[in-house]
Length: 161
Image (cartoon, rainbow, N blue to C red; front, side, top):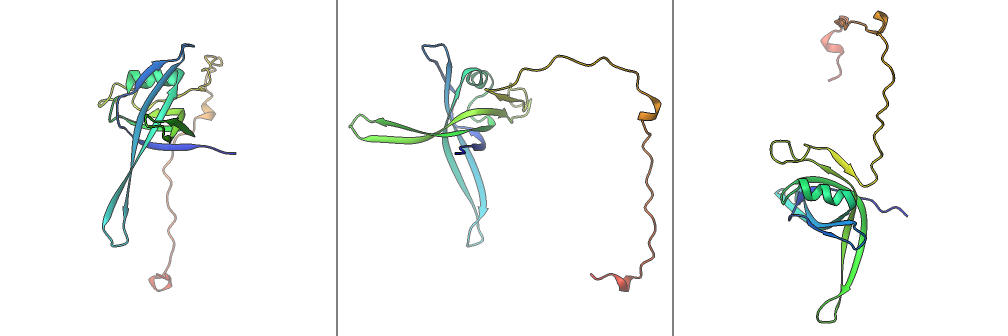
């Protein structure tokens, strides 16, 4: 089965960061995503979706360090159903998105974030190897030339529109 959710929106509250006994960071917050559309009566309408999100490990720590209520993010993850019994003995449940990849979308000036860098729980290590540089041959760098558009002799009566 395929279970993937992608949401762009603003955080509804600061991240609540806690640590499991194993030392794994767990961060919980919410995201609000707005959809604007034209209703059947022609009026512009707005629909807001509120979703709880959970991050684990380094992703949770990065979110706690750089993001605050109102920060714009893109989250990718999987949908999970959480169930519990409330104080009155009733069964309760809600859907939560477990984050697998998160991208900060705020600009550099409005947030201490990296200005749109992505962060993934499964990020691959960066490869620091760079091949030795070789002098560029003159034949590989072609100067950009202006392209002239050929003139076409068409009568205005021949154009179908």
